Length: 183
Image 1: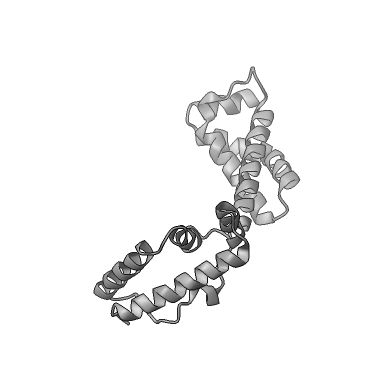
Image 2: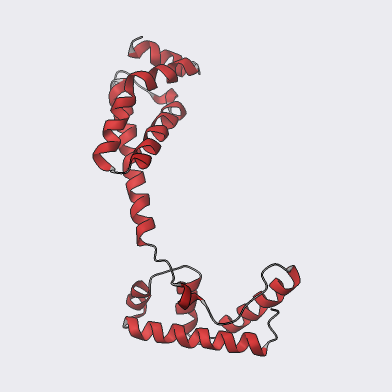
């Protein structure tokens, strides 16, 4: 089956066209993915995404502008670049260490009533923090921003930011204990 027949099947919503495109041009998609990604699972995901997008955009294929192989290669490169950006974004996110996340109070997260009460205490405590402490606390523990980024954003040294966060955690623990946190 040649490209024009495959494109015709695709444009007529016939899945046989997609099956034939996968059979003929899977290697093209794999090659494009392999040039940008080292992990086999990421490459396989790109290949799957490529043919998903081929099906999704089947009605815009124009054989006069490019061959089916070129069109699939272009989709594959785009999918690989998207996956690469996604991986870089994931790597930039910093995991907050357990010891920094622990305020020394065991909280009941199962009971709806205690969860609501505890959330009100936390919101009240965070809202009572002065600026920029409140913003720093929210950026760190709600938006999961790295200390380095927070420091740069507020014109502080990382040690100053860590000190503000430690102070805020201590205040939060005291307010939760004083406010009758439900354990």
